[in-house]
Length: 286
Image (cartoon, rainbow, N blue to C red):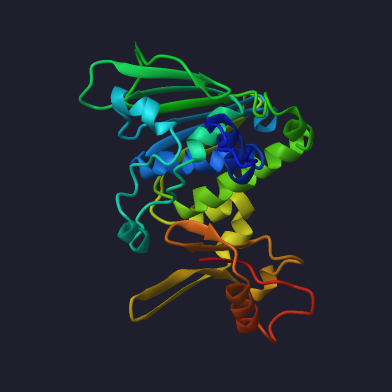
């Protein structure tokens, strides 16, 4: 008798969850990027216990049709890709076709959504990968997704999460990166019932740098810009007097996405060679 068997959809989604959903901040990243891709001009983020008990993302984007709700939480389903060639001209923040399915497999999810041309919205609830029927509901234009009891059916994964304050810190770090990359979007962040950030949309990132890292740093920023062929580089670097002991205040973005790249970080350090003391790192947002 053979020993190779095909895994069930539930097991496949739980494996995917281990790759996509490392901690609450991973969920916030996926849902927040989806909201921005949906054309939202305002997104409200709320978490309880660092996102362990609740993650709520509400946006005023284009929403989804009722027929799309079940499909949106199906593995390898996305509105952001059609064919393989689309991978070479990505214009969105993400296109993981298994992300929503993986999140729904390890939590309780409720999604309410409504499009501008619909008089009523649609609601779908999913618990540990088991979806209920799509129901009509009253809701504003856009989408609201609530993720409760993350890793409820995978308790070993939940025990690996850190303290509430540590997980909340990771969520804030993720929120900060996206807020800097998309300054025109009005973003709010609430943790434990308290509003920690209310950031109206602005035309540039300098104001948001001041919110997160202080007015003194923001006022010392120097504008840089360069273009070579189809590559356009722009952003801010801080005066050498604003150097830090680590590179945590270096934010590099590519196509609106935060990236970590050793070669880019090295290039930045080389540009400041001779201007900083040993052990100090430059500050930049590009």
